[in-house]
Image (cartoon, rainbow, N blue to C red; front, top):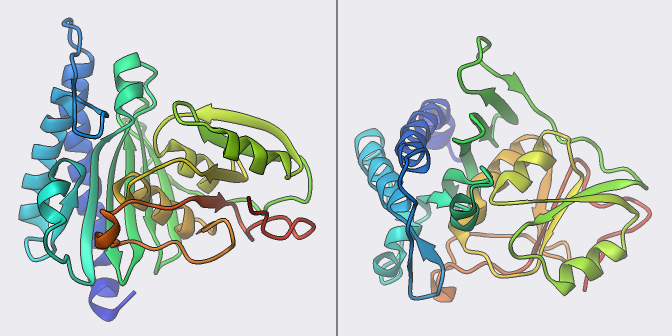
Length: 277
C-alpha cells in the first residue's frame, strides 16, 4: 500500500464499515417487510431488486461524503464506468451480493466495499445484515476483524488457519457450483464441503472455519474484492488456479474475473502443490 493509503487506511476502513451498516439497514427494511420482494432481470439475466438500488444509493452518498476524490465502481453503475479508466486507486462496491439468496431468504447475502490500489484490494468490508455480522480487512496492517452487530464487545481479530495436508474443509457456491469446481476438489484431500452464498465464503476461510474456496464459474470484480481483502488481511491468499496473481481493474474485460482459488494460511497443502484444471 502506498504512503497516502497507509495514513488514511484505518479511517477509510471504519468509514466503509459505517456505510455498509447503513446500506444493510436499507436492505433489511425491505427484506423484513410484509410484502413479497419482486425482482426484474438485468441485461445479463441476473436479478435486480429495490433492495439493490436502495443499498447502492446509500453507499454512493456515503462514499461521496467520505472520500469524494476516489472513483467508485459499483455493480449498479458499471455500464457507464466501463467507458473510462478508473486510475490506480478506486473503490469497488457490490451493494447486495447474493441477490438470489436474498430472494430465496437464506440470509446469505452481503454488502461489499473494497479499496483497490495498483490492481490489488487493500481495504475491504463485508457486511451480512441478516446475520448481523461485519468483517473488516486492512492488508497493509495485516489486520482482519469480525464484529457481531449489537454485541457488547467491539469485535475480535480473525486469522486464516494454516492449510492442513489432509482433511481440508472446503466452501463452494450455493447457486453457481459447477463440474470444474467438483473436479478441483476431487484432487484435494477434502474431508467436507459447505455450500454458502455470496462473499461469505471468503469470510469463512478468513476466520479459520474453512481452508479453500475454489471458483471456476463467472464472477465480477465487485463480487470478490472485499472478501479478497479480508482474507489476505487474515493471512490467506487468493490466486489464479495456476498460482498466478489475481488482479483488479480489468476494464478491457468488462471487469470480469477469471477462475480463482481462495486459500487459508500458507496456500495449498505442501503435499499437493497448486492443483489446476
